[in-house]
Length: 391
Image (cartoon, rainbow, N blue to C red; front, side, top):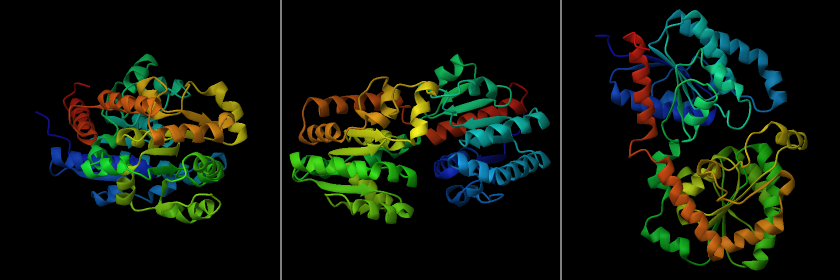
């Protein structure tokens, strides 16, 4: 009988991938005591025992100009990763998110080590654009771990590798998102707490900050009393403070993660940039109005290349427009302010969102098993299948 896998090589990029990778490492160590980790990761993965080959930030580039400027560095780091894997092959290779970089790593490693099991954690967004990536992955990825429930069907339809839904990492945080009895009372009390989340990236804040301020000014004419809270990242605090100086309603800015969670548990409604935060708000039971704006040229091109009719994750998962969204040319501050007023005051629109959020938890649930543990079991199964010759 083959010995169980003991050596895992992981590659992650960006904060979200680092958090996912750390959770996976923790679950693997619980299931397989004595397992060792190598690869590339950030502070979260390093805290779980990973000695990173180089700083994870070397793999992060946002926007066309940054990608072009950083290409020599990225190619150099890719060669280093492939060389480290091939010089001392692990029992399994796990590539966490970072699709373009990691798909090239997988292809290069597969050519040199055809029997090394390769797992991709987070499916590429082939349901948004570039559908051909699914089929292109099949020769060099053995299994994909998806974080959204509709992704296995999409990957199968497009000819991608075998894919399993393991659950979104936010499912492991439900207890910290949902209010206790006292917090439910505060959520219903006056003045209501309104969360405003204009984005986590500098460009998002620049494009949405003043628009959100305009919405709040209009809202204050209909709802004269509300408590405004703006959760943000510590590195964005100065920018958020500068933007909110121009807002007619002054917020409380929150950067501590525990304070952010506490604000989610008492909030009655939210105004948010589209992104993962809309799923976070939905799981917390906070009715939301969402908006997003990209540079003009991207806005012109998007309708011709994108395959989706909504950019809001809860809407995508439920396949219905539960959360109202205002995108690009359709951003309408007066309409957004009216929507928020109705969500704060209560009524059919608020009730419809809350009912949708209850269905969302059912659709995303996995019988109490954490996403990280489910992902870890599949990684070990894929590695064991190769070692026993059953892959």
